[in-house]
Each structure stands twice: as C-alpha cells, then as structure tokens.
Image (cartoon, rainbow, N blue to C red; front, side, top):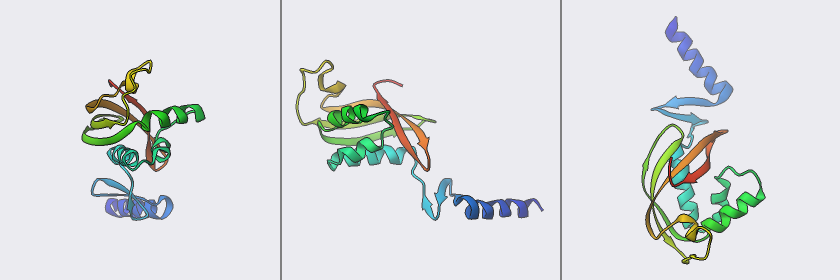
Amino acid sequence: MKKKLVLLGAVLGIVVGGLLMVNGAWVKHGVPLPRPEDVINSFANLINEGRISDAVGIIKTANDTEKQTWGVALNNFANFEIKNIKGGADVYEVDINVTLKEDLQDLPIPNYGWVNGVNKRWFTLVKDGDTYKITGIGTGP
C-alpha cells in the first residue's frame, strides 16, 4: 500500500505541479530546473557575450537605479571566466578570472573592487520561482 501511495504522489506531482525529482535534480515538464551553479555560470556567459542587460536580469534588484549601477560595473569586463565554484545552501565561493576593459582607478573603489586575474567572490542566491536570482556578490561570505 505504501508503494502505491508514493507512486500516486509522484504521478500527482507530475500532473498537478509538473515537478519531479530525477537523479537528484528537479525536473519540470521534462526539463531540468537550473541549479544555483548553473545560474552563476549563465551569468558569466552573458557577461562574456556582452549581454549585460540579460546578466543584470539574473540579479535581484530593488529598482532601476540598482540595475543601472550593476550594468555600468559589469560592462567593464572584457573577460569573466568561472574557474571554480564551491557550493553551499545559498552562498557560493567562486573563483573568477577577469580581464578589465579599462583601469578605472579614479573611482571611490578602483575598478569596483576587481583586479585583472583571479578574483574570489561569494555569490548569494535566492530561489525565485523555478530558478534562482543573485542577491549579492561580495568579497566575503
């Protein structure tokens, strides 16, 4: 009887919510849902492709001013390559190899705190619907 209830629960999950756990990953309508690591990698890829507004769309922002600030900062990367991600529940330690377009030493925080070469950053993510949003990128956890 217990096996029938579990099977019935799985079938109802597919029919009602469209969600199912397959090999340790959540799947909706046959498509795996992105993991936080996938979102971080997508963020880096969007920056490298010059799709800054799409990269900013992955960041949870409160208003247009925050979006513009992120856009300006992210637009200074010629290269943004993820080297390593160490996961956690909602905070991920990420090593990123960057190349800056310009050396912006005249800012209150030169180059927005980035240097050419490998930078260690902590990405904080939060579940947002069927995906994750970046809520912060910091120099410490």
